[in-house]
Image (tube, rainbow, N blue to C red):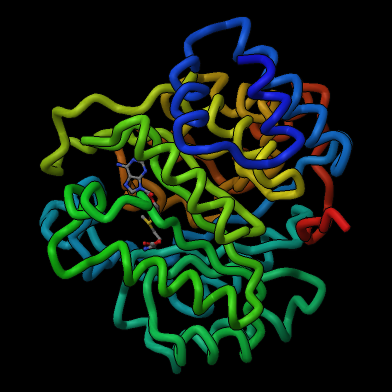
Length: 348
Ligand code: SAM
């Protein structure tokens, strides 16, 4: 197995069978520690001790989709829905800028109210006011034309997790009108438009197999994103998956390390979901090769309404507290938060 990890470090990909064999060892402490060390070395080779921060603004919890795992899915009638106004979004950016953020991430449910006209206005206003900042969007599936308009308005990056590369598994997690093929087409559109783009998946989602995870890794290698966000699936009590078990920290950080070896210069977030299932989940991810954290800049009064899974951490904190908590955690790992846009490096 150690040889396989060295092969992955050198060649950046393994066969599906080899990946399955490797992932299967995620509970083996000796192998995990070896893998984490390799991943840390690769991260430090390219990024040193730097960890990038992104200011996350959860600007709408309206969603037209009904993903079976998600707490803000359209069929959950118990969600108190909200939308931030353009001025509220700009105030979040102002606060974030003063705290040292140079990347803002606008994330939301797929909310048709935020049509192209409204989004273009918001994107261009942010970019006019903060030309030195990168703007990331995470608005779900839109048309090529829409992605183009947003790019032309100044958006730099786009996050769209593929959720699972296996179409059958995808259909176990989503209603019939959503498809893995369409999600993948959106990613190709984003890539062809020149976005720095990110994809990713939940770890331990219902019906997921180790083979599915190997397929996810191969899909990610093939599409070569600049960012990959993975986090454990955490059940939400008002979804049909309420009684399924969630993903584990061990498997998630093992996969983060594999991703660091697959895409050495990628931006890999240590996600809120990891911090929600384990007090030290985010530190563990950093020590396994992650190099991004995304503290929340959303107004405190809306945070508990963006509850995509149960027991999400940080819903009572304000922006300053979220940032200070995260800085403390990062420093405890021997790394440091840097004030910069935090673009991905290239290997050549
Ligand atoms: N609507 C946008 C989209 O579809 O990309 C962005 C918002 S969506 C809520 C962001 C991510 O949350 C999803 O890609 C999914 O992987 C994750 N997510 C949703 N429900 C989750 C759960 N129960 N546990 C862990 N992650 C979850």
